[in-house]
Image (cartoon, rainbow, N blue to C red; front, side, top):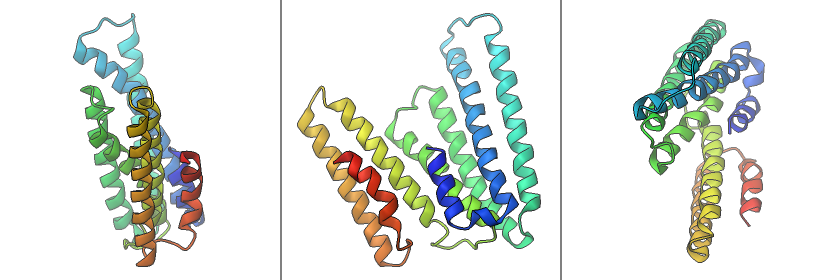
Length: 214
């Protein structure tokens, strides 16, 4: 999930900027912080006993990852083109907010809620426009084309996994639901492309997940 928007971000011109190359590193560090802190926070909320030293290790590693992510992002802002910094920080702020919302939801046991999963996926998909913005791209609909493609990929994966899990209980409904989601995604992407909001090669990015579902 982390790699897809990064690849789209590089394809959108992110490879031309040092700041853009730092965005994936900061994203991975935030991801590691989430997986260090959230399991501990879940146990603490549920008042479950933890092995000796578990809480300290999780908090220290999580705080370390977050501190490193902050330093990397700060350097990325400094390295970005002065004219692109406002756009870069604006997109990054939305992504950080969505990441925080998902982390809180996961702490309270709602990580599998469809609403919070989609919010979390949206935050990850913003890695692509973040990289493009850091490279100097202005905020417009073309900037978020890569994010839309990444999010379509994530939603495809989500519907596929949910359908796979539902095969045991009601195979027909699980398959029908997965097909309808993919038809809706393909329709939305095709409509966006017709209005010039997506690059001509959008279907190449969506083809693998559609083929997997078939």
